[in-house]
Length: 72
Image 1 (cartoon, rainbow, N blue to C red):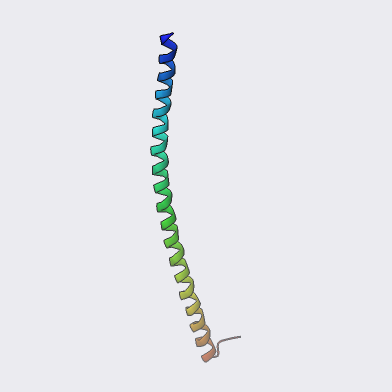
Image 2: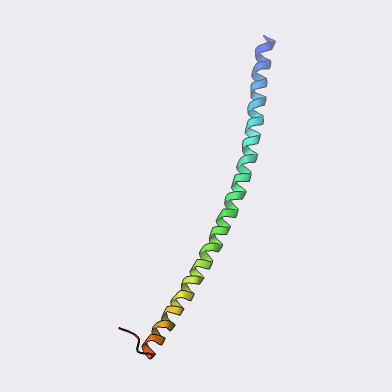
């Protein structure tokens, strides 16, 4: 009967090792996702800033066109 007990213990140790590898992989994946979220947040901030700049340029262009009487 000693052999089946050892077989079960071997399987449990293998499962524990696999679970440890899975936990390490999940930790790495979590860190990568955090980095991606931070990068995306930066991109969105820049995009919002650019939209503001474009709106200002559009207003200036409309004012220039009006002064030069270029509007339809």
